[in-house]
Length: 440
Image (tube, rainbow, N blue to C red; front, side, top):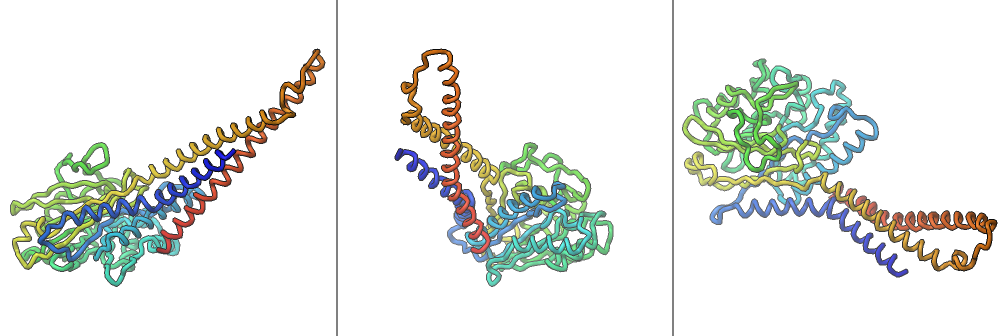
């Protein structure tokens, strides 16, 4: 009999560890590991004076995501919001960036909402997830994406103006020590309307005849054009391993070739960061002066984004010491690390498998306890009743049915009591994890 309470204790401890590790521990572990890898890239003679964290495509789930409503939509929002809040919070706590850049697609159906009150509630929800924990030491910048305002000829101007009024201009220059971060609203640059393109065009033309004196780190929501089937590298999680130049309703997979060439020629960036695709893609672009520049398409931060592992980027910036040579040798002034997060769906699958295994173990244990109870009961000892004729055989059926019914009743009682004793611990652990995620 001592085996049952001992096994229940083991299962209770297992579930507490599983929930706390699955909800908190594994995320902090992976982010801390990535931070360590990023630090190891820093040359001994260099000093990191700025750390930049880059995220993209959180696309908080709303009515336009899957067309769901009611409880199903609530659960989708609850678990995706929980994952985003946890990841963004732990990223800040562990890496302590000086600058955070969100490359766009803050909301999934931002461009679709015509009701300002509903849109405002969705934006408030987004804001409650992406909280700058260290505003005194960290600056956070956000860009618009095609899910926020549309793209090119289909841009919803009312959606663009209301979002930009809250997050600021999507085209801007940010001085980060010796580096220049250029946030370029390339989805507006694709518009045929000059009034929409103006802000981005003015920034490009600013450097038409005079290049920046600092290494330029360019940020564009939509990836730049590249030749068909250009390989994305080993970090790409999709099957085809390249980005197709496809246009559809309110999306362009790539910028146009002309827009891309104009950007590269005028800005001549040292590094390019983009989003939109949801997967990690690294390619090289040729600039007319013969230099190659890398473009890193950053993976989505949302586990609802269609890739197994979500990700963000950490970038360390070093001092250039005013050397113009750094413009032609960007690797000497910064490094880039892609940080991949745990497979969230795999965590939930582990919970389900563990739940099934727990149920099976407790069922077997309950059967054992029930059989032990039956064999030890003198009322159910088959030697206490010996039938001697047909009438006795008929009368024997009723006690046997009662025995079977009693056995199943005891089994259900053992199983229910055991499941209840165990379930309290993971539920309390999950509530604790929710509290930590929200308030720490």
